[in-house]
Image (tube, rainbow, N blue to C red):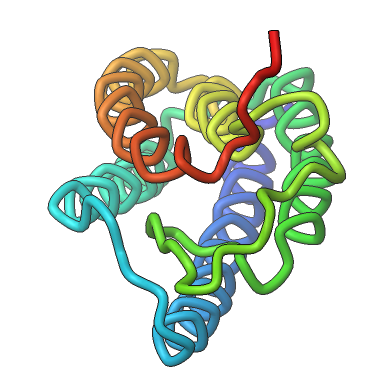
Length: 177
């Protein structure tokens, strides 16, 4: 693929991702406000600015990479990234009004969601994010960004999952064995 064509496709892909992330933040903030109005509380808010920083830096780094003109589209990674977006929709649909970018615990805690991908995995959204943070840079030929941001994300997700598990453990059914 000619360099100009690769850059155009990379820009279109990044526009899609940027708009998607913006729309998700609007949806997450709407759900967060609604849940807080109903008495929900946030747990582990201290790490949230780091998550915002990481994701913002990831997206900015990708834009800078593409705008530098050093793009080598990897169609297998573009395809895999786009397929993951169906997984994203499945996750959002499964959590519905409980999906946020924060750890929000409802006052009247309903049973944990066990439909959709949550039947198979406790944290499918984090699996998705791990894959996306690696795949999108790889799709653009930016393997150094894939490595750097995957390591940073792994460290931050370890903290986030610890916080979330501590908050959700009281809501998990106890094993009878």
